[in-house]
Image (cartoon, rainbow, N blue to C red; front, side, top):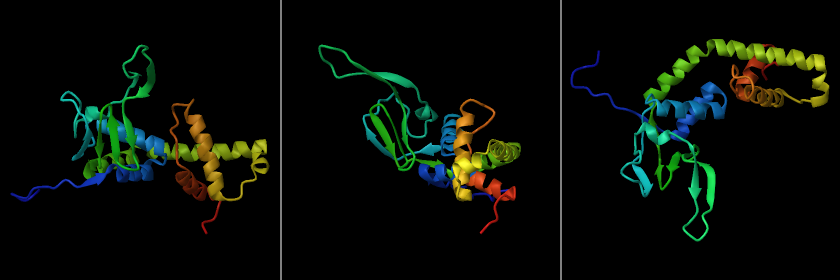
Length: 204
């Protein structure tokens, strides 16, 4: 129980740091970015920015508003003239994860931060829920290796080390996930650890 009169302080971290932590747990940058946007939209991950640039309308979602992260494809008309040219479709929302900014039509928020406690809780839940997924990934890796052996692909690929092999499996997994919705992309670092666990390489 918290002591009377003692207020909890929210610790905020940059969007770029949140992305890095999510990738560390989820493996794939694309998957991590998708989950972050999903949580921001669902009000599960609080955010704000004190640095607004551009012309924000009163009806536009502002700092801390989950609706800011709702993306859609829109057509943009060209500058007024005799002939109307439509440019598009383009994304209404653009995110620069590395520099922690995001923009919509007419305005941009810089130095976006998210609540560290929210992110930690969400990632912890993913780690628990993905226990079965982790085992599934290990089975997928083992099945890929067996298939490659049968097809004689190792000689054709001429793979020189574990990192190169993990990156090859990452590429295959990413391709497979586009048609098999039961799979999600997995980073080569996670696959590399699985290869060690399977005893296919000795840690140096």
